Length: 328
Ligand SMILES: Nc1ncnc2c1ncn2[C@@H]1O[C@H](COP(=O)(O)OP(=O)(O)OP(=O)(O)O)[C@@H](O)[C@H]1O
Ligand SMILES: [Mg+2]
Image (spheres, rainbow, N blue to C red):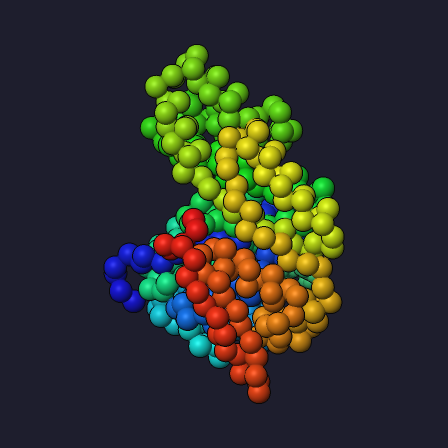
């Protein structure tokens, strides 16, 4: 592995709630971008319950992060597994070493360094559920970070909390020289509070009294925090508009502008693809959920992308650049 720091786009897919489709979306985004010609590495950062390999049709990954952490260790190159799909490599969160969700901060740093050194065009991080540091620290290293929600209120609220926890974590890190201020921006508080009691403007009001010179740091952290949103399992127009409402709430209480990347419909094709261990984009690139994913990739990369399947092979039938580069 090169010691050069990678210039790859790092796309994390998070969202707080479990079972909302983070892994499915990560896999299909990674596959779609690989088919479009980008050199992609898909990384499983869900150490507690890594199952991403199964969605790629890999039964037992021969090596994973848990081996990387073990005392014998393995070289970083060995972690990069072939997927059978051109341009797509995979790094598993699993391994022979019995793992747990509560990996140490040292292990998180090892994984962050590993990711930063990967040589690729795009790195897609599939994240576990929750808002612990071992989840949001991966989200905060990404650009763009994608949050996922289903249209259900419980998922929307968890996604809001996920965005707030990630934002406050990044503000908190601006104050590393001042433990008192760090306590004030403790990430555990925003998790407990409802929307109105822990907002960016309240934080700035408190800071104005005790450390007004730090307000600019908060403004900078907020300005640099630009998550994107996907609504998964949409069944109708109303479900799609749930995304607009979430964006309004985040703007109102956190001053953060979220970009709406698109939606994926509720579809049996998605569930079938899980049972068959084949990403739905590969099974049928012209199905509805596959078209949804291609629109999302188009929006991310500012390219009009269309994939077709003929005689079992997938082709790019159209790839037209719409902008000057990535939309993030
Ligand atoms: N668009 C969809 N249409 C139909 N079913 C879906 C859709 N998206 C997800 N599912 C269902 O939800 C299940 C969970 O998806 P997935 O494993 O990607 O969630 P997750 O957010 O990664 O969960 P975890 O937090 O446990 O990692 C899938 O196995 C599938 O059955
Ligand atoms: Mg998952």
